[in-house]
Image (cartoon, rainbow, N blue to C red):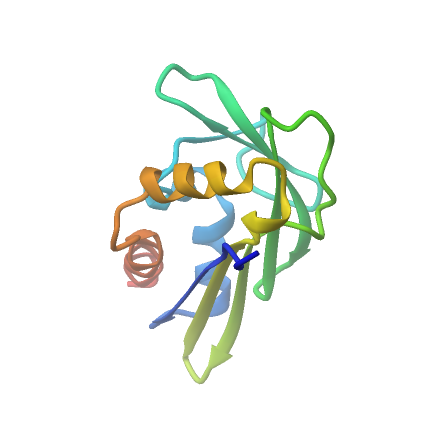
Amino acid sequence: MKELTSYESIDIQASPVRVWEVLTKLSYMKQWSQLLVAFAGEQELHEGAKIHWVNEKGDIYCEGTVTDFEPQKKLRVSPQFTSWTQPVSPDIIASLFTLHKDGKNTHLKFSYGDFAKVPDGSRLWEMYLDSIDPTNKELSEIKRLAEDAGS
């Protein structure tokens, strides 16, 4: 089966510390995420933290767990969709952000998938694609917030 993973990257004129703050604080995440998100009673991410993706009615359709948290380097969130009847290994599918310092700038990479390896993956992939702007402005918004915060 064909891989169903999204890959993107962007250069940001801000330090990894500033970009990390924008990635991991709920107040910023609510501004850059195209999906409706809520943290399970917390204001910023850490290893083991839970993120809830909710629909317009506020119903949780997916719970993510932070499975890799290396400040200013790597943030990995592994989802468990409510439609899955059995848990899926966090190594199978994840949302992964990696940061690389490049002089005074930060290179941010993002990947999300592989939906081909999970139950009902094709439908979930289509649902994901339908839920985001075709130009996926999340990385651009992270860039804007990080560069503005550094001013």
